[in-house]
Length: 254
Ligand code: SAH
Image 1 (spheres, rainbow, N blue to C red):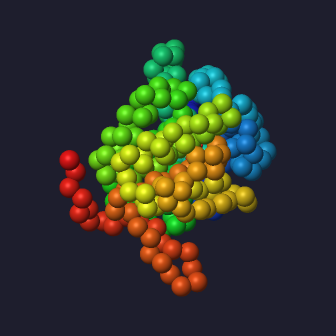
Image 2: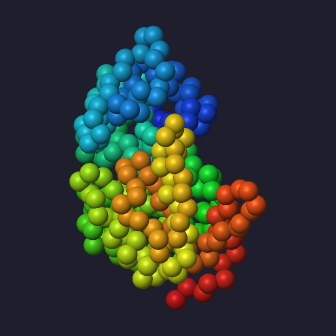
């Protein structure tokens, strides 16, 4: 029997945001692999083995799940948010590309989840209502020069930006630098949304301006949305303003 590996997105944190498709795939699996805190979000089921791993061990985690599936098992690998967004689906593809031929014969499926930028956007209105792009600020797997060039290109072309992996203990300055860079392209009043631990008990959402945005106000569980020159706030009595990017763009790109 040839095995199966399903890479499953658990969404940002709220159990209600786990899709029925993800639920079914989790229920069916014989073995569950994933970063410890993500695995803890999956209810324990009798007869299912659990294989938690550390945060930084993505390649080893992908290989372990593939090796298990290659023994004929129905294995599942869980990711926070969507597994295809800065997460395990690409790690599995990389492992298959460079791994033993037998891994190419496996039944591999990806089950999508609600990614952090969509969960954060939904909390404040519609900041991703027009063209946007997503960038990881981590320079672990690419150079900081590349990140700066991409920030310049994206902001210069009028995209709203969703910034994943803004800071970590080992990378304390990247977000501040990114804001500095973006101030060269965008108005001071450009809305900036900080969404921390969305969908979890310690969720915190704040909206500020690019001028006032503080690069030290984020942690590893924060996703930042930086608007375009068109992104605006709609004030409402007694309610938080709506942040949105109009669907029609009036800016002509250089
Ligand atoms: N696969 C994940 C992203 C992994 S990269 C997804 O699709 O959401 C990890 C980064 O995602 C974090 O540094 C943070 O920027 C963002 N993130 C993940 N979960 C989040 C949450 N619940 N709230 C806010 N940001 C989150």
